[in-house]
Length: 236
Image (cartoon, rainbow, N blue to C red):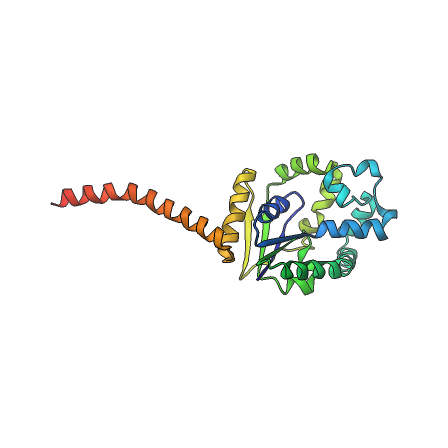
């Protein structure tokens, strides 16, 4: 069983990446923002924006905080650390519960999607692989405006933790940066590649994967063989 993490700026493509993985029978996905949304509604109602500002599917699941509060905590490294440690502490129990449920269900890969992944220290130390999704600011901005109905000011606040290096993507063994520079299909193809490299394919997936490889080899042999024959003929 592999426990993997997917992180990156808001709008980078984490949800697209993990939701595509979630189509696999062997994969269980946990979106930490959904767990945080439940906590916000339970403990932090006073700090949430009005209902009319939380009308998209994403903001309904994880309501937006009032910008002045978010700006205060996201600009100050000390306050941000306190906020993230509190956030992690409050979701830790549910996060572990979901991991155990996926294990009991026989999932071979459990993917945790969270922009502030390193702050879940107990979970982070257990991760087998960490993927950081990176995407151009302008395309992220346009995507988030449509998806979450964010203002430009809100977008700037969302980016502060990464911009100020309060969150630094991990480097080293079993970490990878996934560049999201193209279409949704291209990002999904990258998700498939990373999943296949984890080595936790089901029997059916192995068969399909083997068929793809054999098709590729056959295609290449048709291109290479005539050249070899021609070279052999010339040598004679």
